[in-house]
Length: 511
Figure 1 (tube, rainbow, N blue to C red):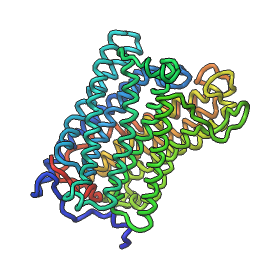
Figure 2: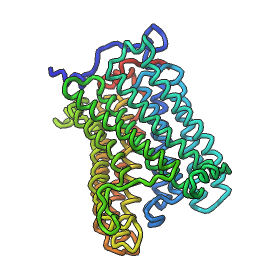
Figure 3: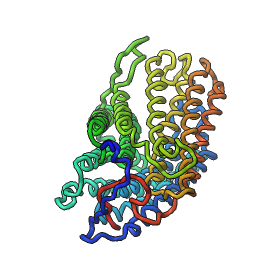
Figure 4: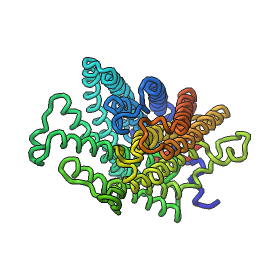
């Protein structure tokens, strides 16, 4: 057997215990994380269905950007997804009992409360009921602070294991590297949470006039810069964390040879991108730095690639490199499924890899094309000939690339980490993955048709109706996959190694 394929085989190594010298039954330690992931997956699916039905996501307003209520609805889905991500990480990365206890018990509860507050706030603003919006705000803000602290505890806890001699001795060098990569992406994400809290604090009476005055700009300009840095920096950092989780779940720490070097290079590219855009967005958010454009052309240099998009794009490039290095990990028998292809290729892992590819196509092909033709698209503003198409892309790619895809990736990873591999489970995995894969492809096609067939100077977005319909159908298919997953998840009969996957971590802590 080729040593490069060893990661695809179930490990026979014993499970170690971080809490005590004795090895305990891993079933007890897995029950709470599994239950937490089931509850969070159900909540995310419910919020997605609710907002899909009640929120006018595709209404042509706000120049294609999210309106204020949409921002809160979007966060109502993403915050529980962050909690789901954290709980999944506790199943993959070594963590001592107390941080693990805090994350698996605290994160789901606080995230759901915060999501409720965000829904209340969103509906209050959508229907212009100030008292309801205010109630949501006062639920949301305390929960945000607690979620911040829980995430910080997780990051400190997970990286602390690499310093403790007894623990460190049981970790491979690659395991330590990928743990630190997760830590660095998490620190970046928490930075943008702080930026978001600065903006939210201004809405409840905290004044930042002193800082705006020191920068010789208006308060509104300062707050605009802060929220822009928050929104532009958060998703790349969070998505980098998701990729790191997926890589380790699929066996990053155990690959060897040239593939190891290739994968490490990909992670390095991601971290370089995170460091660079974090610096740029911090300076731009707190000061008056204007982000330049690469390769300007056209009237007034309007065409060109924004410098920050180049840096955030490094995360996508690094992701594709890591995925390329780990393509053999797609091959993993998950039982007899009546199909030769299914018997050798894991549909869940294929679906995860495709989320990377779909995001890359939408951003690099669709998005960069628009940036290099802004003279025609006009940054979504008239009188540019294709301003409506720019607005459509702005809204639709936010919902797809920065909304559906990361949520679907996390939910797929939960299936990978926590699912049983019975015959029924295998069929459900295929059904969930198939629905999400088809949904991603259909959505991407619909997005392209909708954006690039919209006639010039259209009064509404409906002129690209065929693409819009296909786009909505694709999003529905992904949502159906998420709904099916809620019924597929259940507690395992055994520990982490009973899923039939490569062992997710060298160390499995107890609660």
